[in-house]
Structures are given as C-alpha cells and as structure tokens.
Image (cartoon, rainbow, N blue to C red; front, side, top):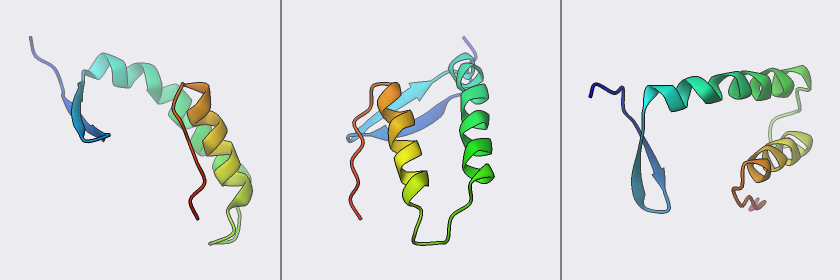
Length: 68
C-alpha cells in the first residue's frame, strides 16, 4: 500500500494520515483560510480570529482554550 504519510503530533502520540484523509479536509481548510483573510485583525489583537478558530476546532470535536 503506497500512502503519502503526514505526521501529526497530538498529545505526544505520532499519528499517520493517508492522502485521502488530507483530500477530504482541504476544502474546509480553504474555507477557514478565506474567512480569516476576509476579516483581518491587528497583530496581537486577533480576538475574533481566535474565537473563529476555537469554534472550528470545537465543531470537529477538539477541545480549544484561550491561553494568552
């Protein structure tokens, strides 16, 4: 089986994702990137961007917290 492997570090565990998984998430990643660039914020004051990314992560079942 020939996979393009991408390594992700999550909670100290190395995960492997094949290219089909990557192809499935690309449209959503592009949507998120476009949204962020439509609403630019001043560096160090990315409050709405932080909220948006937190919401996106929570929608896919990941826990997200503000730390700064």
